Amino acid sequence: MTSRDRSDQGFRWGRLARPSLYLFSITVPAAAFMALAFGTAGGEAIEISRDSYDTSELVMNSDWWLAAYLLAFPVFLVAHRYPRLAVIGAAIAVVPQWATAHIYFTRFVETGWGDGLEGLAYFDAGLRTVLFVGAAALGVHVQRRSALPSRSVDGT
Image (cartoon, rainbow, N blue to C red):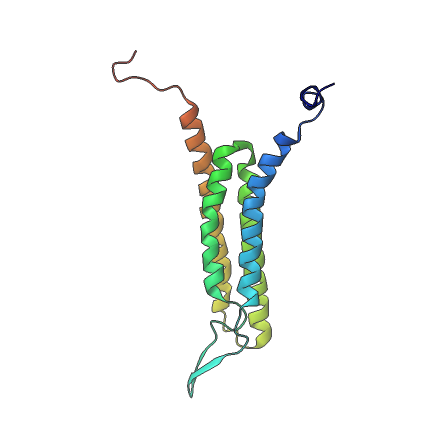
C-alpha cells in the first residue's frame, strides 16, 4: 500500500487544519491585544496640575486596546474563506473585547479613581461587536456574490 492509498482512507486532517489555522489567526491577536493592553499599563495616576490628574494609563494601555479594531480584517477573511465559521470567528474576536472592558471597569473602580465614565468601555466593546459581526457578514456576502455565475452585458 503506497502513501497515496493511505491518504485517501479515513479522516483527512487537511479539512480540519486549514479552518483551525484561520481561526487561530483571530485567537492569537485577540489574546495578545488583551494581554498587551493590561501588561503595558502605567499603573499610576499622573498629576497634571494641583486639581487635575491623568488616569488614562492607570490600569490599561488604551493604544493596544484600540489596535484590536484591526481584528476586523482576519474576521472578514475567515468569513470569506469559510462562511460556516463566520459566527465562530466573530465570537472569537468579540469575547476578549467584552472581557477587557469588564476587567478595565473593575480595576478602575477598585483603584478609587472611578467617576462613572469608565463604564464607556462597555460602549466601545459594543462598537467592536457591531464591527466584527459586520465584517463577518460582509465576508460571507462577498464570498457568496463571487460564487454566483456572472452575466454578460447583453444578457446571454
